Image (cartoon, rainbow, N blue to C red; front, side, top):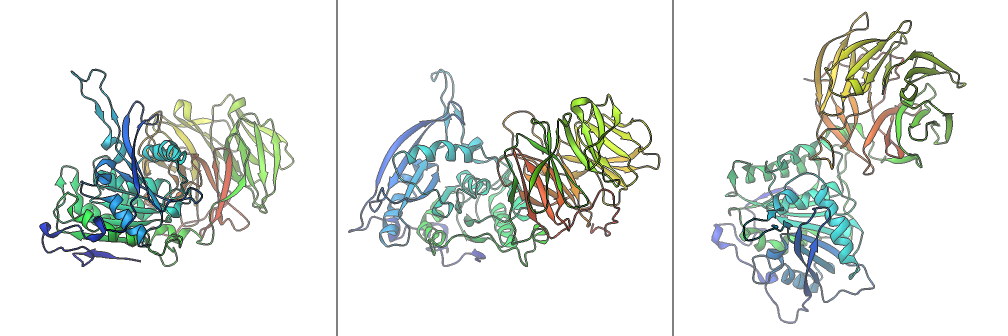
Length: 580
């Protein structure tokens, strides 16, 4: 691993700002074959109506029968111009010729502009900050779904993420990091100069997300200057130090080089050849994830480093309602197919019940029955192991349910913003109304003293104290979840849905970002990213020792081994005193 380098000899000179000059690797050299640069234009669909220019650099050593490495540069015009500051094609020519850079096709792309309808009286809309400064995946999708496929029509580009790098300066720097962060299956190498990890559009959150999130196979080069911007959005220099500190905390392969310049390209362009050599060093050796063994990350204490997400079941339409029985079988609801599946610990999948009555939430009780929120038939029911159905309540609206050791049931009614209590022997009564905007997932704390209710349309999971008569008191929006940058349609939300708990009192929440894990005081301490793009709908502990985490995601169910153990709903486990 590489640590923070301040004012090092890595730069050409750092004595004072005007001493940064381009070295020989950034200048034309006799006898070095020159690649070709061609200019193109593009009208985007992902950024509707925007137009932009982009350039493709193809090295002289490129052969169409062998996939070439790829490096994408933001703010392409300034990067590709031979009379500009960066001279990237010249640097590529020199380094490829010396064997210090693999044969790499460069893609230099400008941010989009929405042309004005009447240019004489109207101004166009400039998309640079919208595309570059946010944390979402729209720009990532733009590159992977529009630009790279288009360039691939004419050139043989490698699809191996180890063969792909992405770079940028200022807002282009954070954009480069965002692309690799969102899609580490597509890019493993990041070059970020004077990156805008400040509050232009939420970039200041990255250091915190890096610290919480399961490590990714990335190598990151950061450059900044002590005189960089210090404006309304924050200090660029401090923000880059925070990024470097977070990368070091997790154990990423990174380098941070600091110079004396302001918010410009003088230092970054001077050290570009060395930065590229570092970024591509030991190629083609694959870039690996940081080793979680001995890591200070909370997620490292939860995940088994030998385990990754593994596919359990697929081919469904939409999976939900995960529940585990005493024999460690996991039950899955496929709502559109109106079917409940059973998955044994050895991975065998069978149909437990057809015509499930539009059930969504499932939960086993102490009596061995599988309880279901059967919203299709407006009922709460219980199924015996042989499939016998018992109706517990009728004419009710429900989505998810929780069952305690006595057989009492709490169920959520998102449509009317209500939570209901159904005693083991009695009729339903409403215990919460309008307090939670969209009550969805519902679970007990491990000692069953608290009822936890996920509000899907906000960032909160509520905590209520369970009273002796079944009523709920002292409610608070207690667990604060991390939010996605934006969603394509509808309101911005964390998307909290199904939940489960472990013996340490931690809460695991299925969200749009993945499984968010909260400690007892209500803080997100770890994030396990989704295995695929589909949002998560539920999460449960399963396996003979309750040490496998199962998730439902779109049409699939996955699992992975972890170092924590879950709690059966018919048992009470008092968690340890939390660290405040």
